[in-house]
Amino acid sequence: MRSISEAHVARVGLAVVEVAALDDATAFAVQELLAAQCAIAAAQRTVHEPGEPGVRLRLFLDLHPDEQDTPVSDGGT
Image 1 (tube, rainbow, N blue to C red):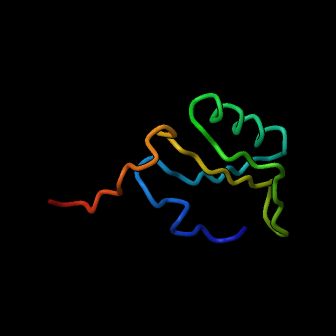
Image 2 (cartoon, rainbow, N blue to C red):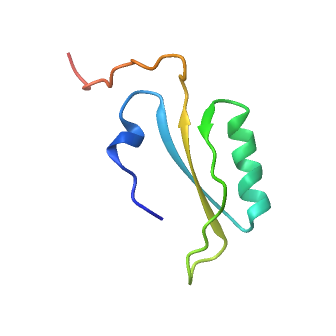
Image 3 (cartoon, rainbow, N blue to C red):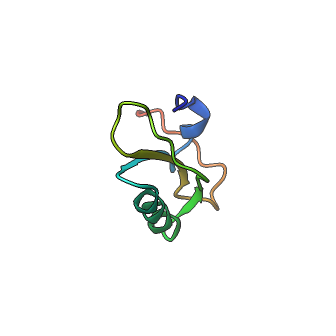
């Protein structure tokens, strides 16, 4: 899978979730559960890495889709 870029987690409430599952049906079931709870950029297909068991599915979550301008905390002050 491609690497995660800084833009994927540029502000509070954004997350990247990678699901590892035995089969496509299980991976997409997890995606449906997450979609019911928050805004997601849904994946259309799974990826199978040669030599690794099962499949992987990466999705991007926005826990606060109505708060587009929430700044990233700098951890201090």
